[in-house]
Length: 456
Image (cartoon, rainbow, N blue to C red; front, side, top):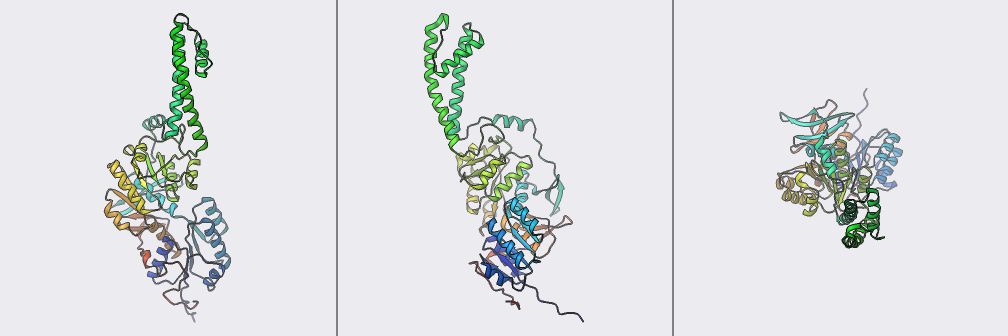
């Protein structure tokens, strides 16, 4: 005699985010019971998990809160599968080590390959890295397929461009510093040349030229003493101005947070680069992925004190402070010589504005736009036929749902208007999603499943 089959238990979704609402709406569209909690307390969480759950999705923007909820869920129901979104790599690695039943990812990690692909080549749907192998997802015969991809190799042109980018001023402080530095060097070289031309040994000429630059006073030049005294006097006066400019530039750099270097790897690239506008979680992951692929990259961020902007500095990624829709900023970043521009800020409307501004500055530059936070994704596609749109929320929702429903998935890609799951067999299967507007609890309060369950 077989035991009666128990009804499926509900899924628990924690987080009143766009991603959480999209996951909740799709689960309910598929006839599954869902308990959707915004910021549950201990008692509310214990009640929701009293009779167990088929799976728990912790979809928050706060890594610390996600960690706390994951540990609490594992304590209440030790065997329940958990999917959590955590941006910080250290926290996510530790969480997976502590909770083997927890699948930790983030929308930024899931979207980075899908954004990097079209940034590098318009034919790419995505670029994925598997160990040392690099593969591109491309459409063949109307179906996404994996292909081997040769990493971008830096040739002599790139090295010359990097060399030309050294000591390139990018703001007023940098210009003051360089004007002062080169002015002082010009006075030093001019005085040294005068002394050598009048018969002084090079070492002695350098000593006297340094006296002039330091303001100590000129030496005699022999035959044309009057002319030299006038020239050296003017040089000393000019050096006072150049020294003031140089000092002002040094102080401005010392007191300010500089995310772009005048020399070294964090200088502004001049050609063949990708401009990433919006150095949030998605922008940071995209810039780091492009850097690993060998593509020159520069970020644009309004807030120079943002955590991810400081992280970019530690990774050697130059970040310019400013608005990505400002024509002056785009021209300073040499948009016309760039490989692509990726507008990946958290606000879809800002991304659209940046894309339109970029198209006005350099119509031939490839544009990749992040969307998904607003339901204006359809309008974005119709208004911006010159750009590639990637719905980050849909990519993340498809992955989270596949994990909750035990569907085999190793990645997600966007193809035309569909989101496709990459299976273990390296095939791609369309995965339909429901609009988050169909989530019946928009305020993020604790919800009662539409399908009655015996434990509610």
